[in-house]
Image (cartoon, rainbow, N blue to C red; front, side):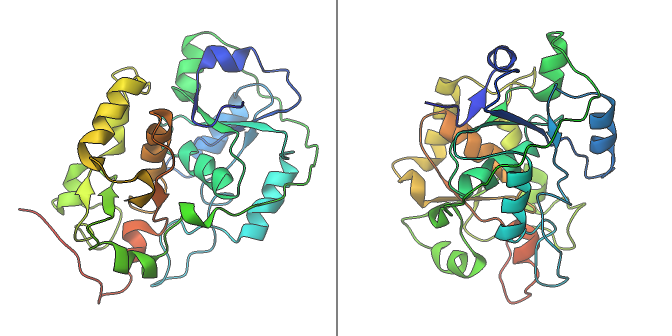
Length: 283
C-alpha cells in the first residue's frame, strides 16, 4: 500500500535512495514566477525534478475562455510524467515552499490520470530543512518510463456540468479561497470579485497549523464534517481562483479518511469569462 495523501519528512528520508520513488519540487510564486525554479536550482531534496506551475502543470491560456491556469492537454502531461520516470510502480512525492498550495495541483493531476500513489510532503521544503535533512543543487538524471493514463473523469467537473449541479440539494460547492475574496471585498488576481452563487467558503489555509503542517486527522475530519454533514463526499465540488489551491482541501479530505471529492478545475477565473454566469457577493 503506497502513500496517497500526506507523507512526513522522516518517512521520505528513509526512501531517498529507493529507485521506485520519484520526487518533484513544485515551488512557485504567483508574484515572481521564476523564483521557485531559481530556488530549486540552488537547493532541493536530492533527486527531485522541478515542475513549473505555468509551464508544466498548465496549458495555454485562451483569453475570455479559460482560467488563469487551465489544465494542459492530457497527452502533453503524460509525456512529462513519462520523462520524469513515472510508471505504474512509482511512488511519487510532491512538495513546494507554500504549504502544499502549488504541489497539490500536481498531486491531483497525477491521481486524475489514475495513479493513486502520489503524496504531498507535509511542511514542504521548510520542514525538510528544519530537520536538517539533506539538500543539494545536483540536477537529477532523466530515466524515461511509459506512463499509461487511466483518466478518472469522476474527479473533475467541467463548467457546463457545474452550472447544473450548483443548485442541486444533493451537491455541495465549496470555494477554497480566503474569505475576503469569497465575499467580494478583495480581489487582486481576477477582474471580477465575488463567488459562484450557492458556494460555501472553506479557506484551504485552515488545514494547516501554526507550524505550516497539516492538522491531525481528527481535527481535519471535524473541519470537513461541519460543512459536508451527511452529504456523500463524491457529491462535493471544490474550486478556488484558478484550480490550484483547491487541491489542498482535496488532499486534506483524503488524508482525513473521507475519500475523493471533485474539483472544478476552471474555478473562479473561468467562471467569470462568461458575463451571463451569475456571481454573488456578501456585504
